Length: 468
Image 1 (tube, rainbow, N blue to C red):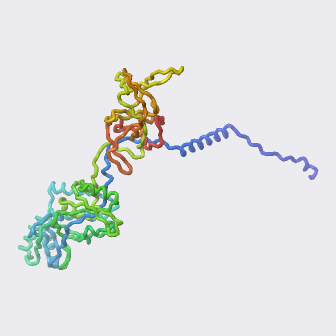
Image 2 (spheres, rainbow, N blue to C red):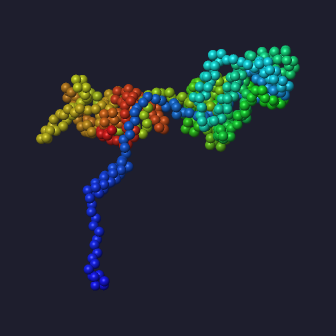
Image 3 (cartoon, rainbow, N blue to C red):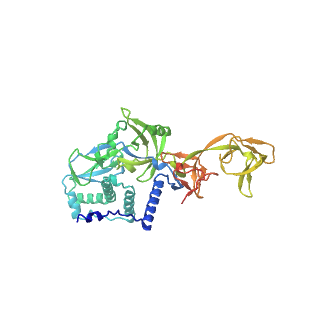
């Protein structure tokens, strides 16, 4: 055994690269290169130009402050309302009744005097109220569902008022309840509401940001046919049509809004619009700023709400809406319009300029150009710097006059990519916010609706071809 050990040889394992392995490695390397190029490049994203406005950006959640007086019940008993919420009552109008014995409802039910039917118009009113709520419903403010519930109850109360009053009189005459039921009338004229939240005597000048935290907000609805003690709150009365909304803003907006004096305000729940007089409120420490808008109409339309979503229609300017990221500034040479010639047969513009031929002899050259803008005051055209340079001499057609190119000017614009390459187009900005600009539509050298532009101007260059 030991003698044969010298004949043992060690063999190294050979690596055989087949065609499949080579192809796999090639594809892998190619994929890595493509991914590297993709992640290290700025892909060109198209944006379709649309018509629009910026007014939807000025939306706030506001607190409504009214002239609200709490009215208490002079008796103990079961309260039934005859005036609906949001109804304006005069002095002496019956607002509610108090049943001191509790026998009224029992008698009305036993005589089937509480039954009521709805007309087609009344059913339509219910449908409209439900549709309005569904359009304005915000799942983040689920408590609004309860307010809507009580709003519907008040609508039912409105429809049943006449029948209830007639039934009540029958109950007093035939049921022996004449002394048990008390009629309670309004001591002053105003609009009725049936809820409290502790903000009834809120001074707008003492408002704080903590009051806008709706998680801590509690609204108590005063429901009909409930037992109430003497001195309990039974309803609220708003005597004045003057009211206001208050909402937090920043210092920059405070200056803008105050300059407006009056602002057209759109209430998002029902799209109602009204002009509000502007005033600015600051906290004692100066850290918090609020805008106050005063109105002298439409108070009753929002009598059931403390928090309102409003939109300030500061600038209802409409036009072409483009993202600010697509806007760029570019320099051009400014050329006297008398030295730019238009060829109507071929629909082109051109210039005649001094140049030299291959032998160095002075000649005049005709160059087709693209017009990027026209300054009517200066009687000049803006021409791309790839066509002319400072010091170039232009000739007027059929004249000895010359023009030396020297002045430069800056245009604001975007890159139009309709034709598959980046083509600068001048724009005129009408209004602007942090994200979008509204630009003048249908300008001679500008954009049209449904044009495609580069979403980010810094990802393209002049005349760059765009791969679809």
